[in-house]
Structures are given as C-alpha cells and as structure tokens.
Amino acid sequence: MSKLGSLLAPKDVFCPVAAGTTMRTYQLFSPGVYRLARRDVAFYSIMIAAAGSFGSIVVRTGTRRMLWAQPSSFTGSFVLDCFSEEGLIVEAHMEAQPFLTISWREPDDRLV
Image 1 (spheres, one colour):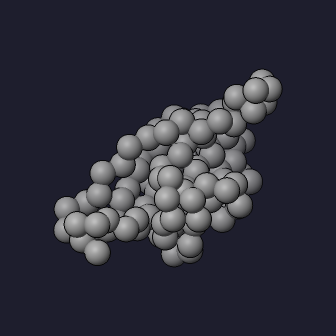
Image 2: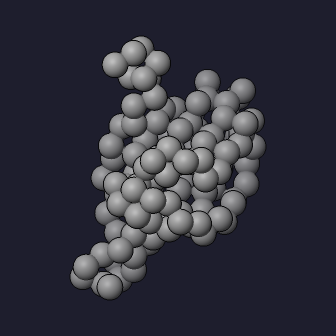
C-alpha cells in the first residue's frame, strides 16, 4: 500500500446502539479517517461543536462515495438523513482537535 493509501485507510471503531432504538452516535476527538459502520446505514446528522483550524471534514459511504463535505470546518448541526451503502466513513483532516458528533441508524435484528 502506498504512503498516501495508508494515511487514508480508515480506523475501525465500534459504536453500540442506543437502548431501544436503531440510532448510533460516535464522538470524534482526534483527526483521522474512521469507519463507523460496515453495512448499509442511514447517515442522520453531524454536529461540529468547535471549528478546526484550516481543516476539512468529509463523510463517505463504504464505497467511498461522498455524502457530505465541509472544506473549512465551522460550527453547526447538519441533518442529512441520507442512505450510505456498505458502511460509513468520516474523514477529519484538521490541524486542531475536532469535536464532531456523528449520528446514524443501522438495522439491528433485535429491534427490526
């Protein structure tokens, strides 16, 4: 794998489902590329609590199709409620510490 490819390889994180719902939430506090899910999901929202200095945020599907991007981060809450095939990947390319909260819905056999 090339040096650039290894930098963009997502780090897998585990996000448990909230009790009694199919909603999942992950709070991101470090720059990098994170895979939040591996199956089809509904990407619900992203909240940026603190602006990053000279940084960008990109949300992609598991197939790397771009769902949402902000080339220069600023605070706000953005509700998208869109389909994401084969997973959900968040890229936070920032010099400062990001404060992001990402929410999505994922099927769960116990609830569906």
